[in-house]
Image (cartoon, rainbow, N blue to C red; front, side, top):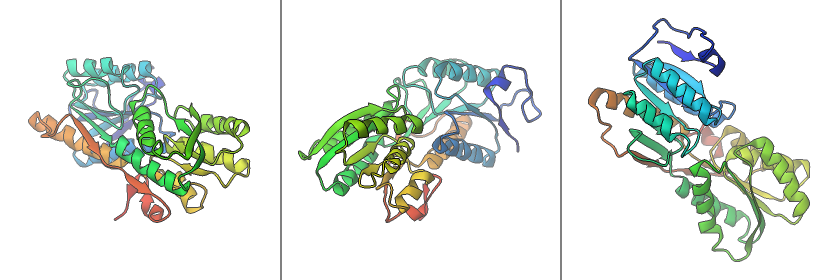
Length: 311
């Protein structure tokens, strides 16, 4: 069984794919943001492993959160006559047209991690329960903060519905504590580099800051690095994702907690549903499906590996 990986440039330069057939009814295209983020790499790995186990070839592509690039990759999947598309999309609104185009070509899409702002276009939209996870993270943040003190929030990419849902979950909990005061809120676009620079600026503007709650682990890592560089080990940091990097920081006492969203499991579930749909024209489940998240602290961090929690 062959897993085909392709760089964007190679797609449109006429470079050959690994494999033999020009078109494949048994081909599943897996399209995610950049694998530089281990969360998205884990999604691709999980989906590819399950597809291989079910007898499919795979075409693994990266859109880098660029809707135009994603559109071209969908075109490529259509041209390859893929049987199905597993997609972690590049924008809740910007991705609708691409998913519709795949549907019109007879290729069902199964969305993971991020929803789009339209139903009836994708066969499935399987996401972590971001609101539930955010409330778990916020409850732990308030507890470690002693329910008081000035804090900042790092928000994800505005075009991603998850960013807003997580922020709402945080505030539905934190706003109940009158002595917890948000003194800064900025988007770092899911980026560790941006989070580092934003955290540096926040420290200069608000030297009394006592906590940072982050919309994802990548931004939490950037914030933690900036705080460590400033010798501010007293500042509480909480993330969201369940990455190995943050797990290690939790075990080292540098980050207080994160929230695990089971990327590997969700990606594999999407492929299982794609397989069932291709065989029966039904997944047997509703389009929108939500998978609960798990709080990760020092108590269970050692059980966490690659966005999976050992029993």
